[in-house]
Image (tube, rainbow, N blue to C red; front, side, top):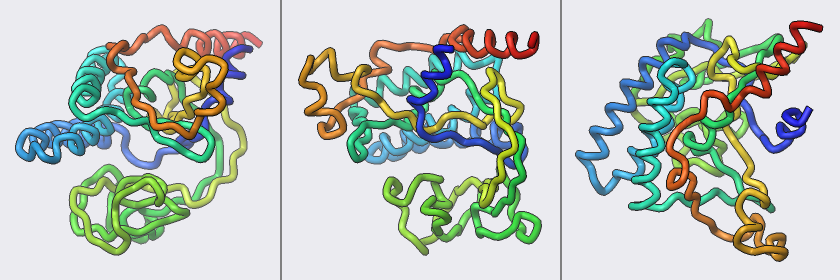
Length: 257
């Protein structure tokens, strides 16, 4: 089971999604178009808006299954422009490199099917969704930046990785319901999860992917300690819909057992 061993390469995944997927996908497409308009209106902030547009497109990519190839071509075109004009530095962590780039994550063509008991809180006000006035998938203004379990309620990033300031108000914030507690009963790796957004969202980049070519036997001296630029979009142009054949084969074997 070669694929199962490959899963060790991935560090973080979204295991649940609470809300209306079609509403989130529709809102994400709207926010993508808005980000593109803002990137042209405010050229000094072009990089920020273009990177945000890729985040919105990734939601569309997972939801609109029949449009994935076309969306991936658009995303990689934006990625090439970002690389050429702004560079795409790879995140460094303690002892390793990692990426949350949508153009890398879309190639991780699988998801998760979870049976679990869950409790949620609203990302806007951190209250029980049944007790608050916010609706997942909607956009809200005047949202105060807060952190829950070290996660920013504005961007969803870990506190150390986001640029928002606690207790400051922000506009155009997408509401979602955050899992505050989860008791997992069973989970499976599937090619097309019922909750389409339960995917990998943080991928470590291991040395055999980026260093041996450049540093030979000395790559261990550099891994996780040297700034690097990601050139993925310069060589890759689109998503391969046949990439998850391994998972489909595992699903077929499981159905026959």
